[in-house]
Length: 454
Image 1 (cartoon, rainbow, N blue to C red):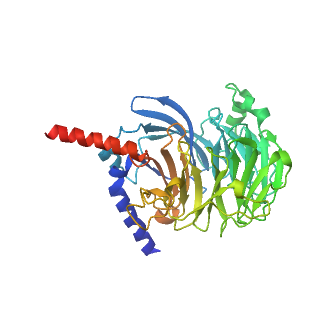
Image 2: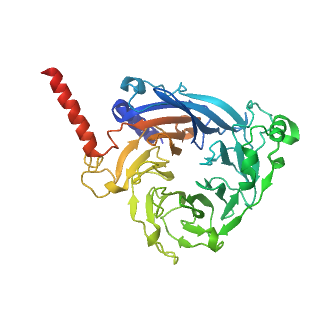
Image 3: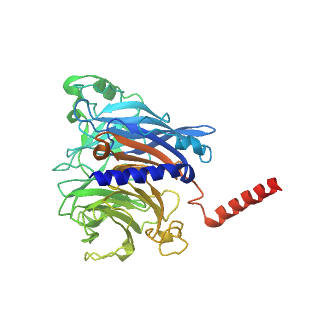
């Protein structure tokens, strides 16, 4: 254990020395309580040198104060603005001046997962250790003080249908107000909140506001309006760990679980699996993401430390299907995989080893691999390693407004005995831009420097 801690510190020190070279911008924010999820909300305003965004986080407490859903305001410095010495002078023990808490919602139970509606990102869904899914209009919800004994905030809507706790698997449809969830009951559950969206977004919603502010029993989550499922889908033999909609079809979705299965579903053809891959990995599957650029490609991350990329055209309903690519660059279980919203071949993976890897499947097998050319041991397809966390990276999210800016969060309970670390960062653009473009720019710099010296 001590040896491992020393290794992590050594890796972190080496990483910190490279921050001015590798990053265009980085903000480090120390969290008193760990956050198991982090998501970008809407962009609030644009200024000359930075943009202001909403950021959704949580506080997983020890019970001395309530668990919370946190709405923060975050200032994101624009590309090519920050000075190298500025980004390298952060303090691990302090809070970043770029992240400010805006509102606190007292959550019924700890927040395991946060997901926002792409069409209305002020509407978020949360998972806790219960069978229900909670829907919140974070702008309409009142700000609450997190003091012991305070009544929990009242969700704007509660989705029922699971028969056992649904803790992590949660997804929002990109095109329709559909919510998808998976749980310990081995089921995938689908809801449509169509009927409620209009009331959720109304600015003057007196019934919600009054009851939210009143204390006592009326603050219980059970008194919120509820809706039942549109469909319940059975095909897993163990806990469903993650779910995802097909970006091009609101009726198609996929799920992964502790049974090592990847299952594809289509609500139009019934509640049985369309395709079931029985051994998608050698261990439990923790996460899945469906490419927004090409609906044939699906990523999965597993307790076997690998990320697999599947092409659904190769998957058979007989349960046979081998991945197109296997990505091996983590030393512990992979907890989160996400496609980049900007470049179709790029994705990220975060793991219990404290590393967030950025991959490009187009670089697999190419000798001119940007990372591979430097080290023969670099995993194929890997072109950037974010080693700024010193404990397991539990979640990360690419910004849709600024597609190479990432928010990532680690649960630091094992490394430092508590709390968490939130980082907002952007690698320097010379790493991900097309090679010819970068070489042309560097050449321009060279001729300028030589011109100045002559």
